[in-house]
Amino acid sequence: MLDLSPAPATLAPDLRVYAIGDIHGCLDRLQALHAAIAADLAERPVAHAVLIHLGDLIDRGPDSAGVVAFVAQAPKPAGIAETVTLLGNHEALMLAALDAPEKDDAARLWVANGGADALLSWGVPRQTEPKDWRSCIPPEHLAFLRDRPLSRRIDGYLFVHAGVRPGVPLEQQEAHDLLWIREPFLSSKADHGAVVVHGHTPRPKPELRPNRIGIDTGAVMGGSLTCLVLEADRLGFLSA
Image: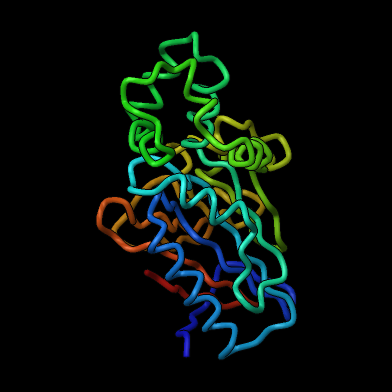
């Protein structure tokens, strides 16, 4: 039985949310975590369950292409009613490089941040010119990544990739902050208007604060891939 403890916000009755942190091409861990979610739902059924991936599906790890293919097929562990996949800053880097191949800085920035590993996972040889990258990636993968939302609000929680700008209303947040921010968000004690569930900044274990919950536990760096489980006024964690 999953160990649950007090949470900093609440969800409506009969609702459960599973939120998965940064995956970075670790397909085997993602599949294992989906299996753990299915097992939890089998043991503890709920009327409505939502699965959220917090972005950074790609880069650095061994199988970015496999992760995108797996998630794009909208896999739903038994008992999941809805799956949401958010845009991460690494997907944003990839799309910027593919959309403007004539801009060497965009291509270099993506490659330097794990894009070389992602390209190899799609079978793109290292010597391939940036102008040819897009033709090597399945169109359905690109269409899926282009259609990712930046955030999702559910009751007392806001799910984003990186965080929010303190002092700015949630509806006025800029895309760059939602994808990239660290400070002053991480050290802020402000009430953001919702408890922010985020990834982006790796830590050895989940960070639980009154105003945020960070769940990037560095799967691609040898840590666990973490799933936050939220229900009513309680929370727990699954990991792979």
